[in-house]
Image (tube, rainbow, N blue to C red):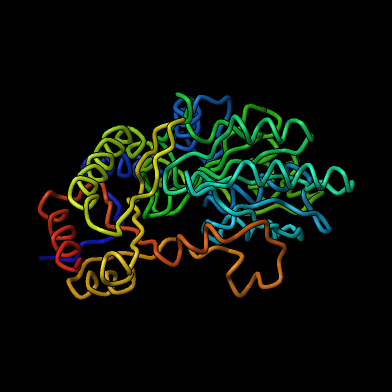
Length: 374
């Protein structure tokens, strides 16, 4: 049996043909017809006015923070239970992340903690400059409540939907709830451009400013004129062609990952001590990764024993995100709550969830986990 990876890219003849067509057109640079088309098609899918294709989701979040005026001395509320790329751009702009725990019922940022933190800070006259949310493992945060809190205090909301393309919240696509939304097309995401990302917004002015900053902030002169510092953040036309082909197959990838999740639940849900990441009743995830928690007292072995046994069988799995408030690089950072995400990390495991997984591969995973149970 060949190795079963956690979330490998899935490409086929259409991706190959579109890249070759872009190559043959000689549009190789970070501009061209496929970039324009990818942005238009992506904005239409998400249901927003504008999209800006960029070199990574991290770059998109960096620009989103800059466009909200976040800078040195500011604070930004950020979920603790997420990948470090959600918080790193806060540091890039010289601001301080304040980590907020997740809700046990969704694993996404806790709206009650956000509301209480904003209320307390408003009383003290020290509101954060922005709130960044994360749609975790493909599941959206609770935007009715989060938007209401941010609107009440006039704090911009930025949506990190890097993991959640194709998921929905009350029928709307993820990424469409913040002043800006950001997506990642890293190789392990549900669609990929090898490396790449996208910023989405309803504001034409914000989109235009993002493109300006992402192309080294070159002013409109025949020579190279610069009045502000910019960045080299634009996506190449070749990779945009790949993204267009991947976007066309998104619905089938979401459907297959949903079936994989259901297959895991059918096989493992009755095992003692095994619980799955909750699915919130307000939306439909894209099921990017299927995640479980393992109670060693009930199951018989702990999460790490299961991970190592899978690795021994050449099956990749991974602990859930280590909360950012527990990361050494953020030692001493202000944290709101923290015990919920810490508990999930201690017991949590991400199972292989690639959209091209076969029934036989799913069985290989579930049968091994079953054998490890008491």
